[in-house]
Image (cartoon, rainbow, N blue to C red; front, side):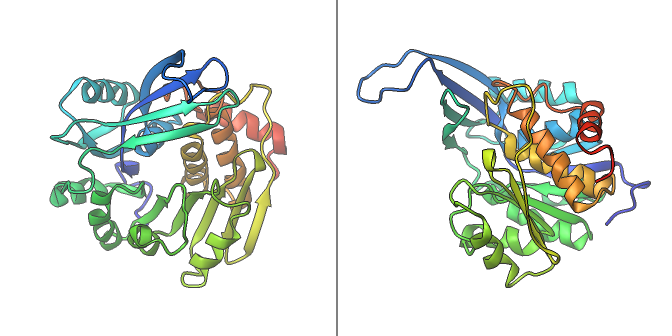
Length: 309
């Protein structure tokens, strides 16, 4: 891993950013009729957007590699990234436009997601420029657009610690995610498709026993898998209600990685700090502009643990 004192960036985030349109139903949706009255709100979202903004709002030096369109949505994202101080030297133009997600939001915060990744299957980033950015990083965090896999060998050659969010895994041996699993030191995934995440843990650890695996389980808490075994963590409680689960998994990754890799917390303590950041994200409605800040994270962590974990 690059020397903390010499690195220009604490983290380079590689992945998708776009506009999320969150559709909030006033009651239970009725898809048997043509029209439902809803509240529709746009915000900067997707895995790359939430994680880049999450690191930056915690106060870490953040660069981003990804794509937006030369359109209204792309300019809005650039303005929001600039507000957070995110370096955008690697923010390229997708000629088909800015990626979009439509999220149908249920009253309890659950969602159904409809994702338009634009040209992410065929884009080819500037490898030389990306290598220059990555060479200035302490570690790098990936999400899984197809074009991002071309940067995995670059990060490996530079000796960077690599983390990746595999998102809602259906199969621990999924060929699309194979490159990301092989290259990464730390892997995150959502257990939304599993009652318990051991199926994915075991499928990956049999082949790659040295990797750290973190699974967000929503209201059921969180789980980790490492050489020390599998551990389960209860969900974090806060007085603020869960109103929007978008970005929660990204908050888990941001809180864990910043604590484990940069602040040198133990694995269990870093998991808890990731859970706190994720739970806070769930209190934010249709925005990535007000994510966890370090002072609040430290305060909640000390209150929960006395600083002893």
